Image (cartoon, rainbow, N blue to C red; front, top):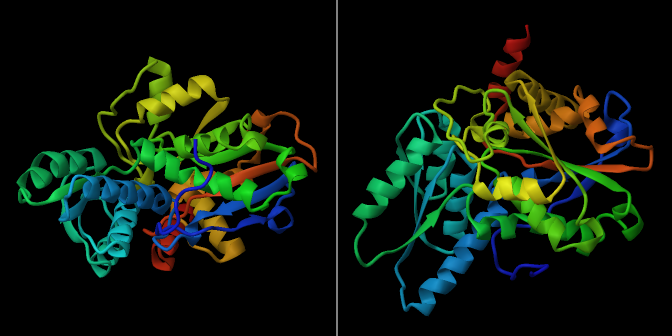
Amino acid sequence: MISQLSNGEPSIDTSLVEVTDKLPNRPPCRIFIKNEYEQPSGSFKLRGMGHLVAKSIERAHELKKENVETFASSGGNAGLAAAYTSRHYNLSCTVVLPTTAHSGVIEKLEKLGAKVQVHGAHWGEADSYLRETVMKSVDASVYPVYCPPFDDPLLWEGHGTMIDEIVKQNQLSPEECGKVKGIVCSVGGGGLYNGVIAGLQRNAQLKDVPILAVETFQTPTFSEALKAGKVVTLKSINTLVSCLASPYISAQSLANYNKHKTHVQMIDDLEAVKGSIDFYDHFGTLIEPACGATISMAFDNTLYLKCFGNLSDEDIIIFIGCGGAAISVDSLNEYRKLFI
């Protein structure tokens, strides 16, 4: 397995910052945040999407296909990653969003040059429309690249570079790597979770570090799949945390759960929203509630860190600050009203 992906892809290296002494309540250990909101498209998804498109372009050239176009379905951030990547490679890009998509996302997509269509009540319906209608109507001269938001090995391989950076760039020293007791990330369709595990598996210093995967009661794809012992498609999704609103989790996530120590924790949508508010109020950075679900574990929900055992002051927990571009100060202030 590679430890570093090829140069020239659109994602960038991101910082790993300790915030232990900046939190309002003293945590039981050292807290670091991997700041994926620094990615040019606004989220970690640029890592995997950039890698998938780069490999797809290589495949097209092998087949002597020159007219490459990308097609993405998204609740927001995967589409932005696809659009940013497509502009990076000078490709035409079409993105289908569900009706729940944030208006600001549509504006950002159009500024990146993407052709935007809105269809379906949630991502699953948008994705079906993309694959069954939009992509089947393209000209025969087009080499279409399907850009799923979470369910592709190339995405996971790309996302895993965030773990590579921690080790290869000495964002943590070898001694500190030995003190990492857990990684916290949010989970919707499982792309980030699968990517973190891919990165852990190719870095021996961290390969056995357990994961706390956070989802909401309103988007329980992982919990329902674990309960059933198979992938389950949710009948309906009604959530404030739209970027976790996948109707199902990837089959690879179930496989990873069975081979890598993982704790799955559900919280309420409002707790995820509160995580976004707290992060902005303490650090001045906007993140979506999908990322707030993770960040809440460093603020109000530190009790859930007990899943990693008895933590000491020298132990380290890494939080994946996955980011998210469908957020603004105005929308954050609207969220604040939910707590009045």
